[in-house]
Each structure stands twice: as structure tokens, then as C-alpha cells.
Image (cartoon, rainbow, N blue to C red; front, side):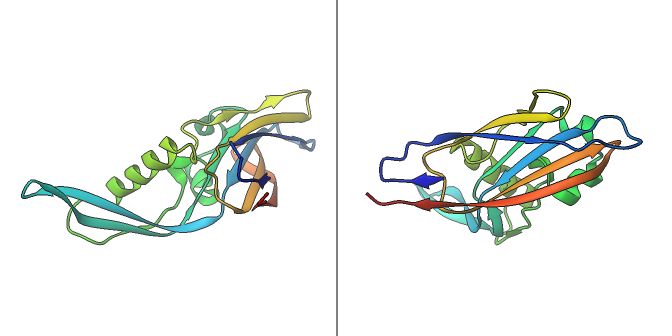
Length: 181
């Protein structure tokens, strides 16, 4: 991806082919696209004396700046929770490790706020996108990258999952740079 001063977002077609799986039923494909990791600070506001002030904070050392998932079926039908947690597949399984800096809301509330804000900005997918199978082996999916995607290295992880296990996985990184004109 290249971004110029007039960049208004783009759609990217991701496609590939899966291997035959010996001794297993046909597998499911899952694609995870992650933007560069970045530290995030979330602030909680409270009303005090008629004005709004910062009253607490939650910090994340390393959160993806962009996160979208596509799959051939719903994730909970493809793999058990432990596998989804291990590979951080799906927003519910994304390890954000939020440190709370006040006695107010717990980490879960800050986590929910971060996900809500990133989804509102179009940087985190609010649902699992569909992967279409073009044939027994070929698949495709479309991903939208909004105008506000950050510059950096994006990771594309493709998993072939059969019988609740990852039978094949590939990771590829792509650089998204800014091109000034």
C-alpha cells in the first residue's frame, strides 16, 4: 500500500490456494490482518465542579493499530477457544494486556472502550468478514483499509484449520508507506 496526501482509503483483494489435507475433512481458512503495534493510552473522563476532567487511565504497551479477520465460517465453529486465544484470532481473543492506572473501571472496561473506539475509526473490524471459496482450493476475501490507517508494516496471517487444529499457516508482511507528492 502506498499513501499520498490524497489517500482516501483502499480495498485490497487477498487470495490464495490451500493444500490438500490427508486424513481430515476439508479445512477452513482464516485470514488475520494486523497493522503495526503501538502503545495506547485510554483516558476516563469524570465531571467535577461542572467541568470534565481526566480521572483515570488505562495503558496498553502493544496494540495493533489495524485488525481485521476473515473466515470461511464463524470462528467458534472452526476452532476451540484455546486455539483462537493462542493465535489471537478474533477481537474476543486479542491479547491487549491493559494496565489500569486508577481505582475506577477495571481492565475489561478499558478494553471494551479501546475496541469500540478502534471500530468507530474503521481500524478494527466489527465482524468477521467472509472468505469466498472460488473452487475446492482457491479462496478470496476483500479487506477495506480506511484513509486513517497508519504507516508501517502490516502482517497477513493465513491459517488452514481442520478438525479444530491449525494444519498449515503462513505469515507475510507488507510495508505501507507514505508517498508525498
